[in-house]
Image (tube, rainbow, N blue to C red; front, side, top):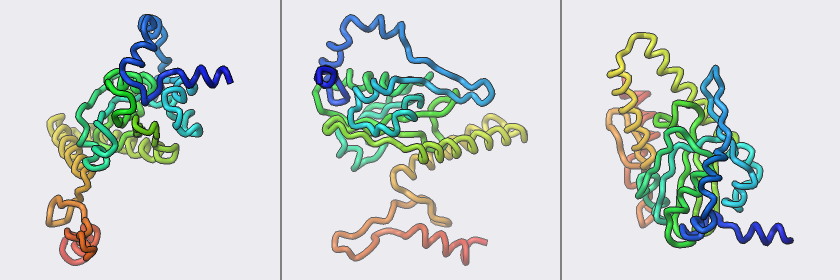
Length: 248
């Protein structure tokens, strides 16, 4: 019981900046001297940054215990900050008012603490923590592992092992494609243009848009207020038709 009471008095992801700074008062130097361990696979460049499961559960008490072992090792390269969950639900990732990049990667706990030190009020804010897999850093061309934290409720939603592995596989394939293009002698300028085009496409997909063959980017279908059906093009059906009859 005593240990439980002590844990309950520690700051967590709902804490105000003042509470977090008070907790760390006089401890900053010691914290810097004890940075989490990092491991880099010399063959693949895979990066892991180790955080304590106890620390994760202190800061994120509602974190799925079964996922702790995975998220204890994932390096975080970006944090997207939102005023609240509603802003995220309505505008998606693009609605964030701050994006903070950690070029070398940090453990999840360090980035959660960084976030809460910048939120003045307790129980305010929503954040998305984006991870990576290797020394290439933050992921642009495929989806990164994501952890969503709502300070108003303390709720946490994080990619599970299967989803993380799916994203890891896609990331590996995309890096392999870059390597093959480089071997074929494609210029850095061309590779940069391809990467930029893919990044723009991914951003549009995240905003709910879809690419229609012979039509370009269109907004995702939405249902009319009267329930009369979609107000925009059904992109999947359109593309299927174009593949069968329109695109030769």
